[in-house]
Image 1: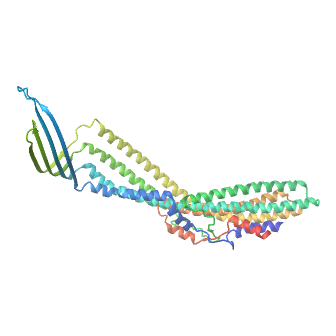
Image 2: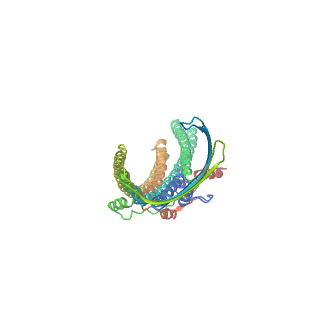
Image 3: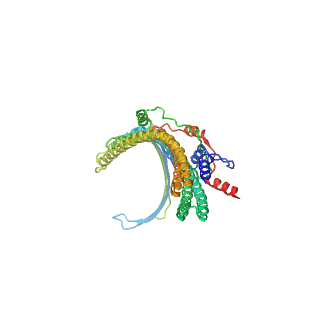
Amino acid sequence: MKKVIIINALLLILGVIAFSGTADAASLLEIYQQALQSDPRIHEAEARRLAALEAKPQARGVLLPQLSFAGAYTKSSSSGTTVVPPSTTPFTNDSESEGTTWRFTLRQSLFRWDQIVNLKRADKTVAKAEALRESAQQDLIVRVAARYFNVLAAEDVLTSVHADRQAIARQLEQAKQRFDVGLIAITDVQESQAAYDQSTADEIGAKRSLATARNLLREITGQYVTELSAPDDDFPLLTPNPNNEADWVELSLSQNLALVASRLDEQLARDEISFRRNGYYPSIDLVATSSEQDTEDTNIINGGFPSTSDVNFTGNSIGIQFSIPIFAGGTNTSRVKEAIYLHRASREVLQRITRETERQARDSYLGVLSEISRVRALDQAVASSRTALEATQAGYEVGTRTIVEVLNSQFSLYAAITNYYRSRYNYILNALLLKQAAGTLQIQDLERIDQFLKERATPEQIIAEEEASKS
């Protein structure tokens, strides 16, 4: 039985990585490319960026000449009687009128403060949109990596729990055989049975957790992927470069994309104050018009002969229009105050994001260093737990250890293996988060990670192979 337990542990450590029946597993970069095509958040960010890019042509367009045309066609008729004192004899008047009118108007702005401010704001609006788009791409990289490694971690847990259950099942079977021949007490059988029942429940829960993790990954990729590549044993644990916390904080405060966007947002809020002061400033426009009116009137008095008149009027004008606001009921003052308060709020947002960025940089930097140490410590813990299990099993064979101690040692081994794998995933995530905080996270980082990913068996494939070997 000792050999069975050790073999299962080694299969978990080594066999999970390589599996002869595994089809091509998806890599981290492939999953990211799927998400790039399918994730609604990145599509939303791209649409908002394209919309923001239109701010500049709109701001420039109102400074260019504005040409408009207006035309009208009218036709009317009227009839009635009229008495003109001192005469008491009424006379009738029937009339018809038909006319056309058209007008071209050319308007060129000479001075409008709101247009000047808008032109200045357009560049900042575009820059902010670009920063937010890049930030969304980096966020997608982190979200994909987090959910990718969450799936791997859930697979590790299920594989570990299943291997534990299989080992306990063999222990339970052997305990029953020993009890039947009177070598052990019934309590050992009951302890093994309780452990087996608990492991069965744990495996059911692990399967549910794995399904949830895969669905969360599907949420951003649009595809259900069951086979993922995992870090191999040669995955390098590199310290951050530069290996100095202060340098990473300084880099983050200057390049973090969310912080850059927040700075631009604060500047736009400040420009909004200037924009709303337009209500106090005059406006000057150059206006040129060209118009023509053609009207034909027909009148019939007392049923006599109709008289017709034809009027044709053409006019051209050019001039400068000047307008200055005097009083608007306090609306302008209120709008300026509102903009001042909103600018104050944007400054507080900038301060909050600055502190969050610094905290993220420090936390991610320390996270990378701590996970490097933790991976190495857990690697040693796996070896120590395996040795402890062998010793406990040997003690049980000679009667110095109980079945409970064997079960606990076995559980500790599988937990150490699972924690070891999880710590490696956390190291990768912290490294990505550190680069995100510094604003330097790129797709090339995923390409470097992919170099150390290998295909491995899924828990379902491991279970299927076990069933096939039994039959």
